[in-house]
Length: 426
Ligand SMILES: *Cc1c(COP(=O)(O)O)cnc(C)c1O
Image 1 (cartoon, rainbow, N blue to C red):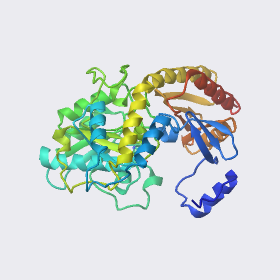
Image 2: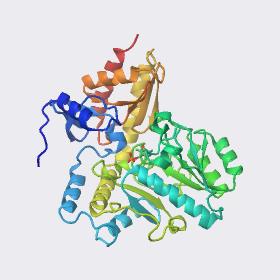
Image 3: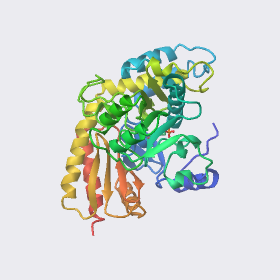
Image 4: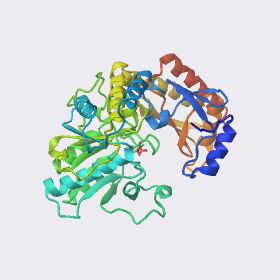
């Protein structure tokens, strides 16, 4: 393999700058190795990873069990396409549908593709089951949503930077404020053509915006009442991140997935990605029961790589790790500790306004404008102190470490964060 050797961060950054499209603005750190909760840069400096690749690496970097499954399958059979059957997809489909308790799964690769898939299923369901007139189906979405980067998905974003000059936009979306059941009811009532309500249980990219505890329950009930599909995008919140297997499990404390009536707002369509592979491979999935999923017939949707043998093996291993290592419980326990410790600090802070989140998906909001560079400057200082995090806005920093962290490591990280924040106090 003729891969040019990188010997300094500066060299790697310059190379990307020259040869790569400038569609990201990374923190200036060049990583070369990851293990568990840690990553190392090319100069050999060790960091705590407090982003986890936007919650893809919930199981920790290079988890040996997931890498083992990937390696074994990659050297046996990697891709057949769906033109033929393979001997791993079926067992994966059985495993994941039993795990999350849905009749069927449709396997894709990236999160945005899975969202597109859910939109297509919901529209088709509206025409063929609900009786909506052709071309009239509408999907309700929330302001400040993030569901990916495809042309259709950015059509219903209200982030100007993500949208501007990418039109014409895909029609068929109605936007309502997040965390507003009245607005949802109004939208559902005022229109007979609603296919579904697409929502993030916590808005990650918006800055870990955490709704009222009963928002999901109310949204689910309203969708049911008005015969619209309740579609949960759990690409970032799902798979133990928020201290339960799914964020729509609410505050349920069980080990796995029990469907407790009081807490669980069961989606009609569940969208997963990111941690479904533990960050080792692009694996996404859309889950639904037969009444919804059976609207899709041969030739109507697909992907060359979706459901490939490696992805299937990786998916099973990644989900096994979540259960066997009790990651939901750990995220719940450490998340509470994290917020408690930061709240103690905030009491006497002029800089940090609040910490919010659930499980190990948290963010702090600092006393400055959304356009300021304060959050970026703090992240640069955190990097110097051995911890990597990224702003979601000029004044918001998300904190989302791998869920395999232990209490001692978390307390070490809390010390780094507080020590760093103190240098920014006026
Ligand atoms: C990351 C993310 C997506 C998009 O996933 P990609 O794999 O980047 O396409 C969609 N929805 C949510 C909530 C996400 O966090």
